[in-house]
Image: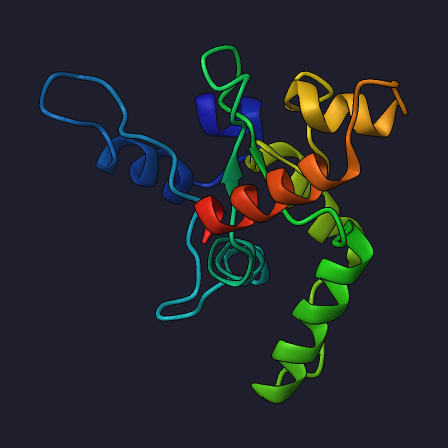
Length: 152
């Protein structure tokens, strides 16, 4: 009666009963969850590209308030994508991931930014940028040289 009512064959019932565990429950559904063996997805390649290719800097003055890291301000998402495509083409890939995929991986999986927070400047740099009268050009250039030396 069950088979006729549900319009199924006995194989469906036996398959379902065969998946029953010892404690009377059914196991986790495994359909559609397998990935190719030994293959890296394009999103994995994007993550690897972002992690390896670009040096990061911590925020200096706002370190205790933020865990965000900063990339060189000359970079942007389009440049990162172009570099990714160049690398993938050199590896022989004919269909790299799209720019929107690259953008979503960058935005949702990394805590990175391209510019410094406004709070992340010392008084000498901020004073020079605002052209305050107390800023001496020689002092400012010495300050920049010391800053570069300490970063190196």
